[in-house]
Length: 223
Image 1 (cartoon, rainbow, N blue to C red):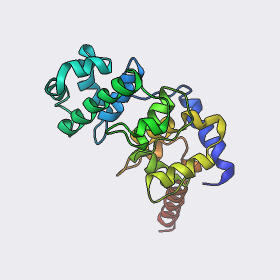
Image 2: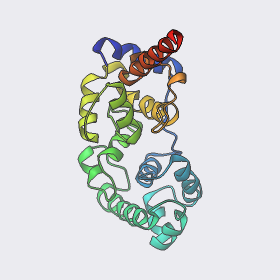
Image 3: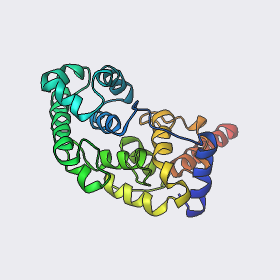
């Protein structure tokens, strides 16, 4: 993507969705952390289904510990890898209570020391809960960034750094929401919906598809 196209690219996404939000359901910072921790290799809809019943019973680290590991495991058993995730969340709750007074820490270093919390999860919490302009690169952002040419890289961290370098400051706080939602609903993995894409004209692969269709149409007209 050309440098001059970046601002209008985000302006277009912002105009369509001025206040983008995560689709994970939560009512406090701990619930957000728990939901993101549980979301690895799972859909937001699947996580929300499990956390609705979990958060009705336990919405603080202390309450999750009171459930016990068996109770927690049973509450989230509809999610993939639920046993591992239950152990990670339970241990995270223990650390939050013992080392952080039951509060979710506000630093990347402290967040990434929690079991099951990697860079992406920390970035989501820092952005959504604390308003920091982080870039949580998931499979959708990785795909959109590389396809559009906005921020190319061979792994998530490379894409993250490329995006942070190129996304204008005015859009940086909400950029990862726009890119995730665009990848989830428009720039699909197998069959991207280019005809419905509002930013196709800025996209490297989108422009290539337009050129290919134009050439095909011209060949057809000559025949």
